[in-house]
Length: 497
Image (cartoon, rainbow, N blue to C red; front, side):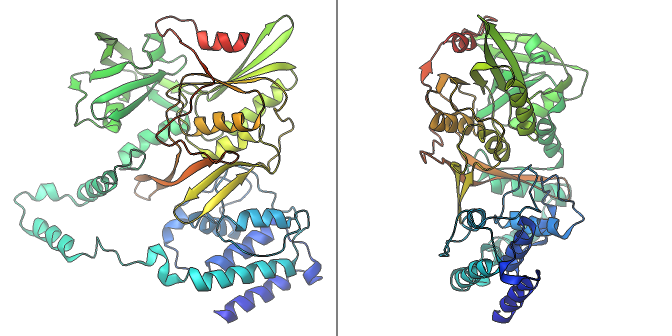
């Protein structure tokens, strides 16, 4: 082991004609750091299924595979940003990356660039930590599998396979999927789910921002309670006047009971396209019938509007979901609004269910001072600080800000609202308390088309270090919005106040 480390350090030293005084680029650091950390670990081949989001790293390059391993082991985040690979990296930036996995004691000059000699010290510290605390025998993925290798499990499976009265029940793939689903549901975590291939497509359709259906966000917090979160703007659901908090009790001839999952309910509502679906809805104690034509739903996740009064512009930015690409669209809108001389910003995340943390933290760079911590992620093994470093052209710091929230603002929406209030003076959160979900999920896609969504960490605010999981965010200004009228009293208050 010692010889391998010395060899790697020698290779690191000879990458430059001036050795110790050579300043390393981000790409050189990543290649060296990741390969040194993973070189004595057994990593399952499933790491190759990870799809990196970095637009400037080609899958055909060696760095792509290196970063797949880094993301698998939580050594490096997977974010939809251009990595400045050719830019020289500072000691402070290196420590931000390394400290997410290792607590090392090396002198750091924050603004100094990384030299070979300095990085040698860092790698030797990591070697010492790994050899004492993180030996391969102690890693979780090398533990004996007490479920699959259990003789009781194997014996029952074999008896059913050999002797059960109906061999059709023992379809191998169906049995596997149902066993996994039960195992995952046994964790009693509403945010950890396994999706067979057909159900995976339904989930991914919504993430892509384009699908067929009626255009409504729904949630099922309890069995048989299928609640409409909100209709999507311009969708068939909005046009027939489906409202937030409507409870769907029947879909065509099927009642929403304890045997109907959220995935099954949404699949029945969505398909087949261009046909109608009949919904029976409970609203304020009354049963209402709706006949909705399924249509193509295209979701615009970021929209803006300017309200002008007395030659003063109030700029509204409405964010419906933090899915792939929303940070890029947000940046484009904020750049356009920077020329409009906005005297107030309103950010609307009502009914926003959240989704991708990588997207929201990039958007928070507009509000968090440079090099300050926006979010802290605490997993089972490591604590990671997410720092504001991808600096936009304009910071929102000295302009009145209102953030509109409600009971369906969840996860990334809550992070967005809370962090802005933490760092921007005079911010008001307006309307009602939020959903209260501050855990982190990861999606993992398998070759057969199935997908696992599972909880890997909890989020804490970087400045106040608060976690509100299963609690909520209380607004600074509580308002009442009449749901049976077209007027938006919450938005009107935010514009005038």
